[in-house]
Amino acid sequence: MIEGDRLILRDCRLLTGEQVDIQVEEGRIAAIAPQLPREAPRELNVQGHLVSPPLVESHIHLDSALTAGEPRYNQSGTLFEGIQIWGERKPQLTRADVKQRAMATLKQLASQGVLFVRTHVDVSTPDLTALQTLLEVREAIQDCMTLQVVAFPQDGIYGEVQTAELLEEALKLGADVVGGIPHYELTREDGVRSVHRIFELAQQYERLIDIHCDEIDDDQSRFLEVVAACAIRSGLGERVTASHTTAFGSYNNAYANKLMGFLRRSQINFVANPLINITLQGRTDTYPKRRGITRVKELWQNGLNVSLGQDCIQDPWYSLGTGNMLDVAYMALHVCQMTGIEEINACYDMVTTHGAKTLQIEDNYGLEIGKPANLIIWQADSKFEVLRRRPPVRYVMVRGRLIAQTQPAITTWELEGKRLNLEPSNH
Ligand code: FE2
Image (cartoon, rainbow, N blue to C red):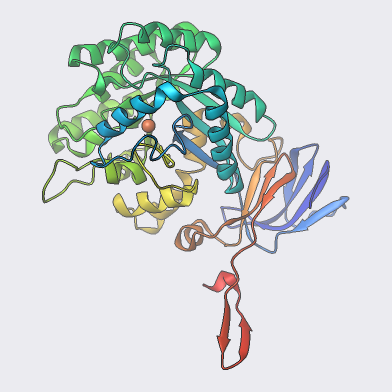
């Protein structure tokens, strides 16, 4: 175990490929240089493996996590059956129930190198049970993980009379981010109005914005342009995130090209959730069947910030999931056809540095002198190798303190009575 205030990590490989030592003092990075001469009470020889800033989960729903099958599984596989099932589960929410599932999920995430998490929390229940619990969880884990809470009106702001008030109440209670779901409002006009209301609230309470936007295969679902316009006019720009935007994958190219120019002006962030949307979308198609994911590669090529999220872990929308962000990046790489070497590297950035930009936490994120010594160590030598082999995170460190380590799998061969130990990194 590595504990304490002074530590040197020897023989680290940075994401740039440089070989360096990293010195940690009082939880912060004090020096990064080849072969640091100074002695420290504790040293860890990283043996040339990759040292990276922690993984960032840009979009998850911790309030519904680990409820798959309660009260029933999603048979159609659609977003809308998921919303119905969640509506049946919601009345059973208690603080103990939400806390137990959220903590279990966060532990899964942290053990796999995720230390920064943005969770959406449904605020359409009258007592705001889930939201109040997640705000408590945010405080309880703050020494270890950073949790951002999005006030998310799952059934729309204007679908029921009390939700607009509940959304504002959630901000008064301390939610970090204002959410919305314009494509699920009762009418297009309500959807547009909801986006304007979200921007008003964000400005009034000085919060970030993250909107579930156009998560549907309908090529006429066009709230992204409304979000971009509001971001341009308000100047909120990179404080705004559009999540999912799957309809962007169905827009005709003439419209998409025009929209891309507006998006560049807006400088908003995007979050894609490829594990979920490859399964939820395209359900009304026969063949050819659409992929149902936003234009990740094209947004990235246009210089826009794109990060990735799991969205769901074992809930009414997705019964699978383990908390492994490499599953997400790997799916994005395939579904978005980002198989060039630079594109594969970008998929790694989308679960690290790009996520930090979406969450607006860049001041405290990254391997730089003066920043908190939060880092993960892979038994690999490049982003490419991490994504190709998807090994477990070997070490997870928070402010220079080791909080989790995972032993790699060891394969043993039994052959004519001889036993061979093979290096796991050569798989
Ligand atoms: Fe979501």
